[in-house]
Length: 320
Image (cartoon, rainbow, N blue to C red):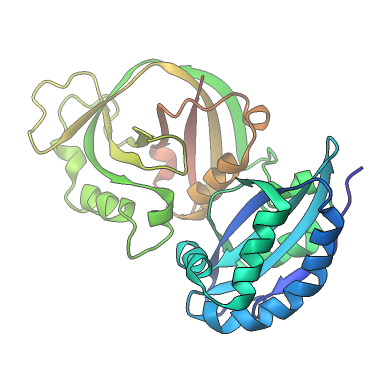
């Protein structure tokens, strides 16, 4: 039996002045015998704590914290959502805080929880989407919250998926090393400057032996581990040979493998590409259709992408 424990810890107004925030979802396994203490704490003690920590966290942009308790296979889990302008700074502020309330909170965590798992990476969510998440979550079984209801994948006219196989591909272009945390910060993100360089310098025209001139590949490869780790972003075009490639350009071989192919759109940038990836990051292997290989994933922008307000693109997610 799954049940919902109603509580919200509001650290400031539900809607921030900015349009986007970051959100993180975690699962904490409750130690045996501690369930009632956890319920009591999050229904009462957190009321006192939120007042004390508000000023401390204000500069770090922490906005709202809420949670639910679920039962699964005889164990109980606290599912927590945390929203912040800058998740890394907010969590660092908490870890370094010497406020008595935070010291007690950390001690409580060590006493009552035995396992912590991040269920979702950090997202950008519109404020209205976050409010829908909170409002929609209350009557739902908690499994549905592992993927925010507003982001949960449902095949529609605008997003279709199939399993496919792609032969080895040779790509020429330029690249950078980054991760999704950096890309959430417009000042620190490395992908946009590389994409800007690629198109402003008309790099594609300097690539020899192009298979389909004008069709752009954006590839995520050389993952350190998974989508939350560092990876290489590579933008370029497919070629049939590396012969004659200039020394200032990079080359990449995408090995043959199976993929889940998502076709998304028509839609405008950045949502037409951002939202499908947000959904992919949240999918279980069963929902995706296979276990991700993290060898290479890529997007293809062809003639269907010419109209920037009505882009249709294919996203290939590599599977084992």
